Image (cartoon, rainbow, N blue to C red; front, side):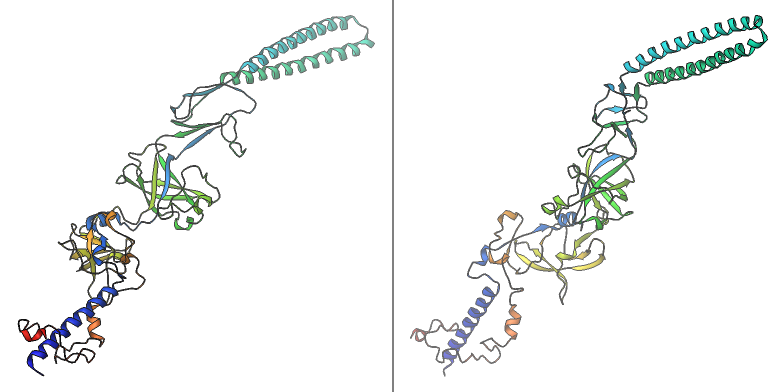
Length: 454
């Protein structure tokens, strides 16, 4: 065989190997006939991932309420004449809240005074009778003395009974007068009017306070948790209370009570898990109130709605880069992340790991990444060279890249090691499946020779 023909055969082998390997690489990536150029992967800035990926997967909504609540109960035997405050009003100690109708008490006093006057007249009459009997007794025969004595004693007994009745009636007057004097109910604490219930019962018919006042000063947070998640919280557990308006504004506290004996009203501040907020099953689950005592209440206002989340140290500021462990691939080799290079193409970026936070499940990145780098979560099917984008709307999630059932695509080195290569780089020989004569193929070394075209 001539030197020229051998060159042609070698060229054929190189081209064939390239074609076969390229095909395996293409289909091994799961493209199923679609163009890899359409694949795009969404990447995020390391500093943003480090900020938001705190490891906290749930929180519960709550409301700021007073540590002290004063229930004002209405006298069931009295009628309220006028309510002097409204829900939401701020009151001080001594502020009038409402007044009772005193007309009945005034009528009773007038009636009782008449009765006392009548008793006084009876006593005067009894004394007059006694005086007359005593005069007659002096001139009466001895055998009639006993009868006079008996009559006088009877009248004296009547006087004592009348005096007792008179005192009882005066006590009634004093009671009615006290009712009049206390007709205006004033606040015993400084606070805010939370509710006014004129019926004295709730929606279920249970007896409730006529008026409730929340004390100002020391606040606590009342949250709710459903029966499916109640085991996740414990008394004494530290929590973070986060503002709904400014998520960077937080307060720290401790769970002081979980009331599983009382069911919470589903229409008030119910618990919502970020992971399960769309789960309709939580709507029908029984909810229980729990209470958080705060280390500080500065900046909070009564009735403010907040989020409550377990304290895993997510508000502590750590120096350097701390990345959630789910972003780091740790196979048998060096750890790496999937990062965007300066050409907006995905690549495996080796990183050096430092300390590990087993509470937040984060690794310290000593080297390999900066806060300005962009990375993506290492999902199945990623490959180096795919286009990276920072706008998630540019990603086509219907592409085969996001619908692969296999795990990792075939690696080039694995392909060359499994004995299927058809070109022997050392001996220059090609597999016997290739055409033996190589006619009609291009010799890459002597393409200008006219004999090649034959």
